[in-house]
Amino acid sequence: MPPVIIIIAGLAGFVVSAGPLLVSLVGMGLSMVLSGASKLLSKKPNFSSLTHDSLTRAVTVRQP
Image 1 (cartoon, helix red, strand yellow):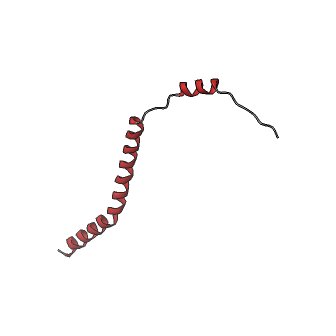
Image 2 (tube, rainbow, N blue to C red):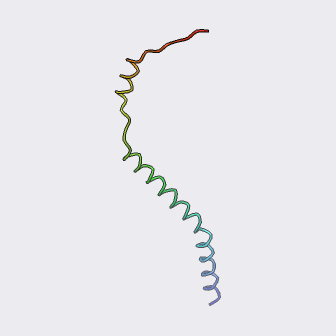
Image 3 (cartoon, helix red, strand yellow):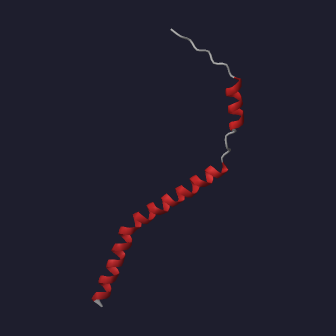
């Protein structure tokens, strides 16, 4: 019976030591998934209006 207790204690120690690592990996995975979803849902910039504005805008250069 003592070898069974040693095995159970070893497994319990492994679970306790691997717990924080597992939690951090799950947290990183969730963060990556949520950031990807937010990029998919965000509105894309309209570059055509920016190029039109830059073509019609006058620039004044002041020299000393």
